[in-house]
Image 1 (cartoon, rainbow, N blue to C red):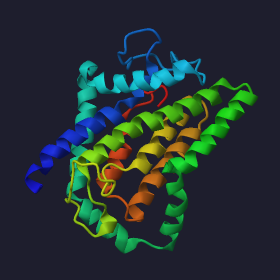
Image 2 (cartoon, helix red, strand yellow):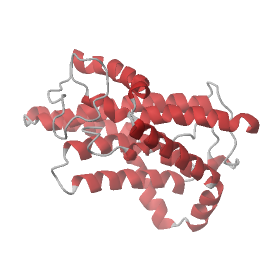
Image 3 (cartoon, one colour):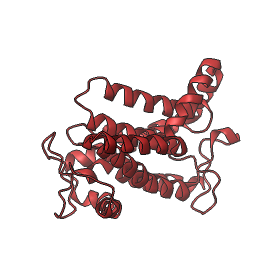
Image 4 (cartoon, rainbow, N blue to C red):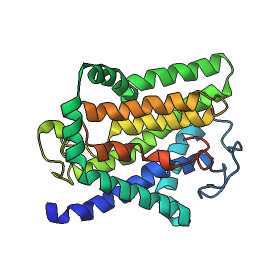
Amino acid sequence: MKKSFFGWLIIFLLMAGINNAYSAELFVRNPGIEDIPQISQPKGESAREDIGLGKEYLKSYILDTKTIVSSPLHWENQDWIKASLILGMTIGLYTFDQDIHDWVQRNRNKTSDETAKVAKLFGDGRYMLPPLGLFYLYGCIAKSGKAEKTALLSLESVVVSGFFTQIIKFAGHRHRPGHGDAYNKWSGPGFSTSNLSFPSGHTQTAFAIATVVASEYEDKALIAPLAYGIATLTALSRINDNAHWSSDVFLGAARLFHSKKDCLVA
């Protein structure tokens, strides 16, 4: 398994680069126009202002998944540089995963455990879907299109990016640190539901929502730091709880490499 590891890792990271770093592009497509990422669209001119819970919204899940898969065909030099940075930094963290794990576990304490206990909830779909539903309901009652849009795009971002995250997990079957296995033990590909450490699903969920919220409410100075701060705590909680390696968490949060200029909503 070790001999083929780096070959698998490159494949996983390229897939993850499509998923996390560029999933934002799917939300700036003009309805009725070819599914080509509009990376350079001016800030504040999102083509998806009118979003409602209906047939077109559900259809967007399929169209946006297609856009993510085909997006590398339209990447420019700066996009390949971003993907390379994600690839390089993930591999770099991977080489230090065991050392980082050992240091965190040696310094783990009651405060970090209590913080992690709360923070990890923001990456758990079972706890995040109800608040999104309530926020959407609030938007309907208060006639707030922004609230409705934020809730719906957050859900779509979580589902679509989560789909690709699961593909990567089942392709790699990386063992979790809590099982006592070495950082470089992989068992994939396969369909077993065990050993799904890479990348972190909790982190992916937290940052998928945080990116949408921060982008939609960019006019509120405190929203972005708060949203990304909570998502970061969620990511760190997974390392603290011995549930993920540092490289798992980093790749789950890789969408941070997308700037607000390129990422109008998620």
